[in-house]
Length: 215
Ligand code: GRF
Image 1 (tube, protein in one colour):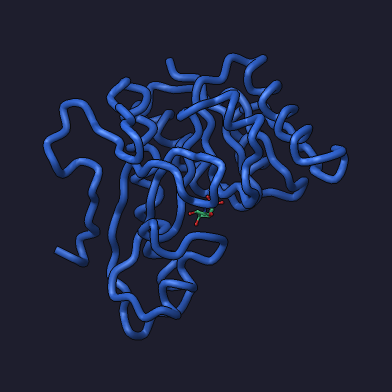
Image 2 (cartoon, rainbow, N blue to C red; image 1 turned 180 degrees about the vertical axis):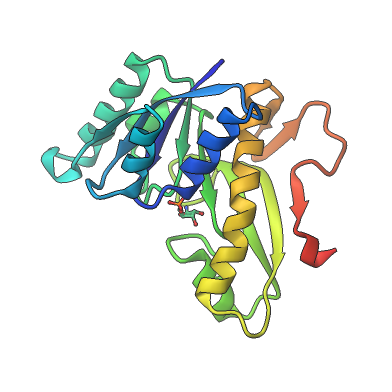
């Protein structure tokens, strides 16, 4: 069974989607630890409701970014975590954690990368006037939203959309695509070559999801 560590800063609906996917048998995995950088993160409540250990680490208590991520890596390694999930973790992950989990950290971003990186993917896609947006699951490297792409889902952008409505439409897809990417990892089906992620046994459509509104 795959041992997962989750990092989250807030609401944690993606964390919940992962918990639910484990509960309903879609994912053969166990969340070993939730780490947060925010003591008020609702994700903590979700962890406690599901008997998952949680750990709040205040970045300001550490002498620098390096030591903060060294500590997180140590906590995860000690517990035997094999895959780290960034589920709305609102910080750029530091090198010690990336080095400890090479190609073993996944993030979800609410836009179709490489467009609209950063903290406001949905708002930026709207402001740019795109007609299609979506979400991306990718491996994490040292850049901001730059690692190899595992899976993407597309949704329409309507002319009367506001940031809230577009975010909600994208979030629905996030909750499907993130457990899906984790499942591929847990099945040992992901092969990374440079920027490309290949899926063993792929039929050609599996990692490109299109919402029903677009078909
Ligand atoms: C999501 O939109 C995700 O794409 C982004 O942060 C948000 C987290 O939402 N990285 P939640 O905390 O999982 O509800």
